[in-house]
Length: 158
Image 1 (cartoon, rainbow, N blue to C red):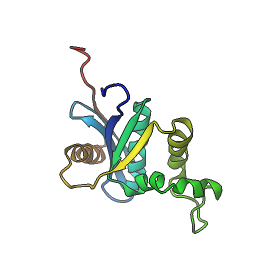
Image 2 (tube, rainbow, N blue to C red):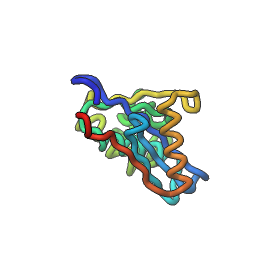
Image 3 (cartoon, rainbow, N blue to C red):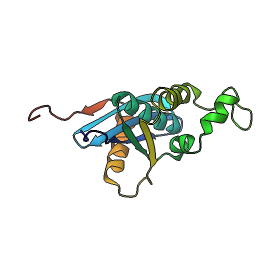
Image 4 (cartoon, helix red, strand yellow):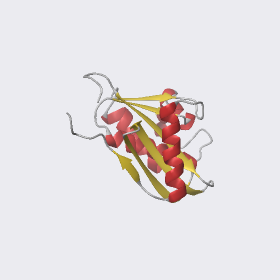
């Protein structure tokens, strides 16, 4: 765990074998601390969002989520959620916001319940960043195998 005041850094990723199709999500802090899961029929964007939601739920304190999804990161960076909320969860084209069922609770958690505790940062995908590559591998494996996977650091030696 990071020292006091330092956020836990968590890499997230989502994958979909066809879009829509079998999907997987993952978050990873290290090779020894990760979780992944699956959905039988979903989209890549939903899995990207679900990975972030799972990471936020897993870490109640200060957390920095690192994602290769501009869809997720730009929502908070560019504050898209402000217009969505003001327009009754409709986008600029006056159509319902896609994936509202995931966006609404995530925005509520990040913006309303835990302001300043959850940071989101973007990383280029498939660029050799080891933790991003691990999250991608875990999400892709979860999509392909349709199974859960997890590892937690041992409490021995603490």
